[in-house]
Amino acid sequence: MTALTLSTSSAAALRADAVVVGVAKGAKGPVVAVGAEAVDKAFGGKLAAVLETLGATGAEGEVTKLPAASGLKAPVVLAVGLGEVPAKGDGYDAETLRRAAGAAARALSGSKKGAFALPIEDLADATAVAEGALLGAYTYDKSNGNGGNAKDKNKKNNGPLAEVALVGGKPRDKAYKAAVERATALVAEVNRARDLINTPSNLLNPAVFAAEAVAAAKEHGLKTEVLDEKALKKGGYGGILGVGQGSEAPPRLVRIAYTHPKAEKTLALVGKGITYDSGGISLKPAGHNETMKCDMSGAAAVFAAVVTAAKLGLRVNLTGWLALAENMPSGSATRPGDVLSMYGGKTVEVLNTDAEGRLVLADAITRAGEEKPDAIVDVATLTGAMVLALGNRTFGIMTNDEAFRTTLHEVAGEVGEPSWPMPLPDHLRKGIDSPVADLANMGERMGGGLVAGIFLKEFVADGITWGHLDIAGPAFNESGPFGYTPKGGTGAAVRTLVRLAERTADGDLG
Ligand code: BES
Ligand code: MN
Ligand code: ZN
Image 1 (cartoon, rainbow, N blue to C red):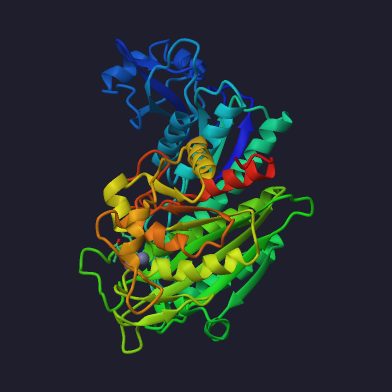
Image 2 (cartoon, rainbow, N blue to C red):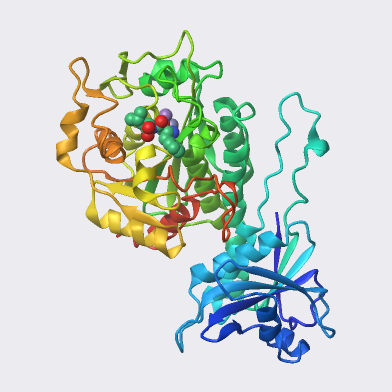
């Protein structure tokens, strides 16, 4: 991964492949942002004019590369757009800096070192630039196919920018050092989630995913338990088994736990981990199945968040539950109309085998509830309906507790992850009544994302605070990269979960 260093040198004196400066959209053309003074000086104070001549406007996400003027150690200047100039006295908000740093880092892919001279006025700004640069530098290059020996031939890129030097960072200040450590740990785990999501389904089945969790747990002192298909059968996990039984690759339920000796609260995180969602017998049509390797993004986010908590030593207990299965059609697959006996004893009529996420989650939520955590949060690429409702960048929040809904929404906002609260209207409950079972796995088509939430709520034990994050939109970016978000797996919800854990550790669960 990209290394991050704090630098006291001036932007002009740093040896790097490029020096990154900010450019904002002023009333009369582009304006060079604070932090770029030394660079502007090398251009005789005319950097803004040069940028304007090159067509730069300062619009958010805009990247302009130009040869450096003499007096600068770096051969290239990269100006990244920051959008509107903030009102007098205000700085740039954290998300603006995060995105700009991300776009710049991505534009420097394959380079050795970037000197980031963006407008950093305090610790929060430095943290945002650090996070954004590390997140934006990510590249995925592991598509070697099966059969094994394609390695270098298949290389799709030159790898991430190797080093980010933060100009204006304070290397001797403890708080700055801690912020760098936190950003590095956090982004390494966001990138772990992205790698898992981007890994093709023929290379990442439930058993492989479980093995990854066990290996990481070993490295970071976490406890794991893996239920294989035999143990799942013995335990009566009919939801996970029912979804996985059509695949040659059997399902798993992984419990991965981080505990702190002084923790006062325990959070259970439950992740949907469908390593491939074909739809099963209710097969998805072409056009709807090409990206379905991403259907384990919830489990990837949960896994990454638990490991991050361990790396940061947060004063909270986090129990991750990864509900892993591959949803495939075959002679052994669950048929529409079959009734499953779920963990805990409820029965479910499977009307549509493509509504599989709620089945694996139901088992895992019931199991998680047995341990009486202070709250359960599940994360899932659950419904296409949520994508229709909120688009590709915003996840939906559903809960059984208003205060918790506010907390989740706030926490997501703090880390720059767009989210929106969605209701769980009671009238939709009767739609999932079944004549042959306690529940059906499908109800009214309208409000499909909320119906899924209402289904899950049935499996939350009385008295437990529960939140459901439907990340079907933001989990996988099918269009071009933007800000610090790459194409493909995004690592959506990892930072929200980590921030929630941090707030819980601080006794501020809401
Ligand atoms: N994994 C899909 C949801 C999805 C859609 C994720 C688009 C990412 C992008 C889920 O398992 C699914 O197929 N849901 C169905 C439910 C329906 C059959 C009730 C859907 O949303 O169409
Ligand atoms: Mn499905
Ligand atoms: Zn699915």
